[in-house]
Amino acid sequence: QVQLVESGGGLVQAGGSLRLSCAASGRTFSNLPMGWFRQAPGKEREFVAHINWSGARTNYADSVKGRFTIARDNAKSTVYLQMNSLKPEDTAVYYCAAGREYYILTSFTSSDFDSWGQGTQVTVSP
Image (tube, rainbow, N blue to C red; front, top):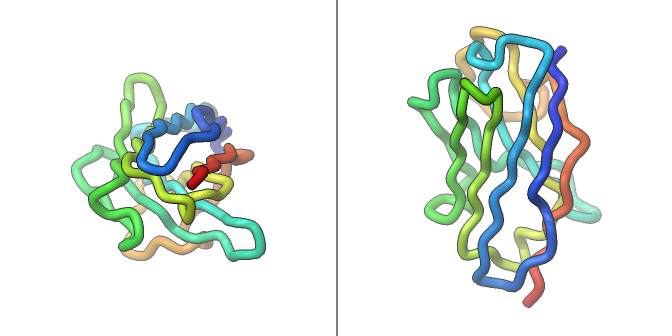
């Protein structure tokens, strides 16, 4: 498995921005599809964004399209989530996830990813 460590969470006012980072180690990062998920209190974990191994293909949940951007730097083994125009409903623990090497994902459920970070808290105040 790959080890994932998220950073960049915090408290921000509605309308503000945050950038999450996820540093990976343990496998060849450039072979891995990567994703971000989030889980709010009392809710199930939900898909936020995905990026394929090269960065050429990205996918987003409808709730974050146009506000969030996922990107990766394979030289640094890091994936990012730039979050703009944040809303209180974006408050959640955000998790970085890695898929299986060389897989081309066509669905983005939790079971499509096999390595997870510990999560980072994002809180958006009204």
